[in-house]
Figure (cartoon, rainbow, N blue to C red):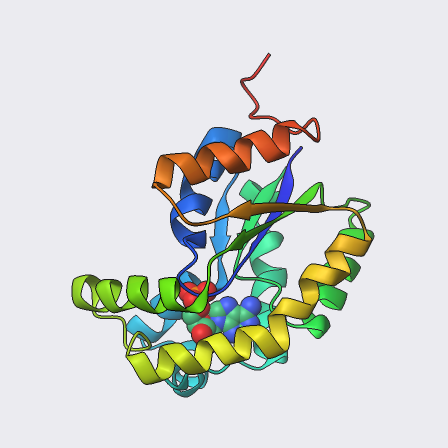
Length: 197
Ligand code: AMP
């Protein structure tokens, strides 16, 4: 089955593409950001622990994030495949995911990198701030999230590149166009939706 990751800077369109791809492939889209936000909204202990990090645009500590994703990947719907959006974000999280996959005798099939330059993502997130009112979409926090991405997450692209798992896609353009680029990139590696011939 299909086990995929989406990596890219905030505002590259990962969430939007994740939902579309997951539907096409018949696998759950798992977004650590969404899980954290729903915990914050519901006032859970995890939400209370994560909130200050999220609002500041910092990564939530690996210990919390890794525990969360272990639980989520152990759920029945993720047994045969999943698409992770926003995880892993640090080298420690890569180690954790590697360990989880090895314990389950399985592996990733591909890592999709969605690229977009800083000016583009700041513009997009400014628009999202008006539409959705996310507490971490202010310009200052967005700039910080971009720095955190560059420092902590961008190096993962090389890690997965050296494993020859990387499918790099330009995230600038219409939503449909970007989805097509991703599905074409995956198809070129022999990875297709479950109902494809
Ligand atoms: P996102 O929805 O992916 O943009 O994530 C929003 C925020 O949730 C991030 O800025 C972090 O504070 C937190 N977060 C999401 N995923 C992770 C992760 N894998 N590791 C640490 N923090 C995360």
